[in-house]
Image 1 (tube, rainbow, N blue to C red):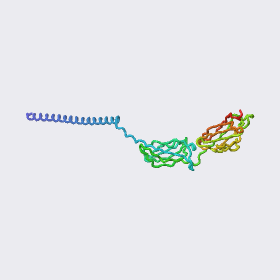
Image 2 (image 1 turned 90 degrees about the horizontal axis):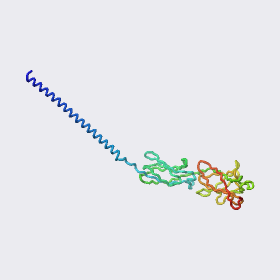
Image 3 (image 1 turned 90 degrees about the vertical axis):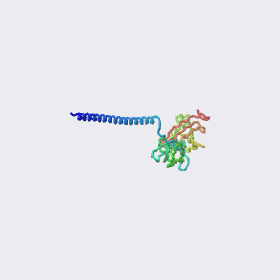
Length: 301
């Protein structure tokens, strides 16, 4: 081969090797750059994640909800004629409030003991429609008050509701059946015949918190009515002796009563019993009251 031909082949080979080397170098440079970018991106992501975790663990708490406001309300109970009535008289246990949030329709319920007017309770801020219920101890609704609409409760402030009046027509009454008994065989026979020797009885009945209860007792032996007894606290009626098998029946409004029964021999109180009678809703009252000897002057031993 001529020398100029061999020279051309050598030049072409060197050029090919140079191109190959340049291509490899360019690939290496591109890969290094790409890996650096990827590595840098991953490093940034890791740093952001660490910062997020640090913020979550040690700082930036969620905003606190607004502080509660509060409401206060007074209530009373009255008859249709406008006369005041006690919680005890109607058997009321609690005054309950039902608040409906105008924005969310969520219901908040709270209650106060009936006798503890006024009552105050914390309530979340908002605008509410408020209804009022008077309940007995079993949760039965005895009465309602007028609703109050659009009541605004503000954070940290006390809102005074309008006074609430629960009105009752006929007050509930419960049947009360009483018996008077002595330790003797009978109440009315003389001591010589084994009886207590009582010749007459008096009964005084008064509300524990509201004075005399001038009711009429029906006297009954078995199915036969044997008369009546009218309670008069200032001047008690002296009734013919009430025997052990007689029942004294009347109707009493709910409440607590004090009863004072006396058994007379002649004009002297020789037998007595003072007791408390609790009249509650839902059930009648049946009691036997045991009379005790007084040992007073003029009374047989």
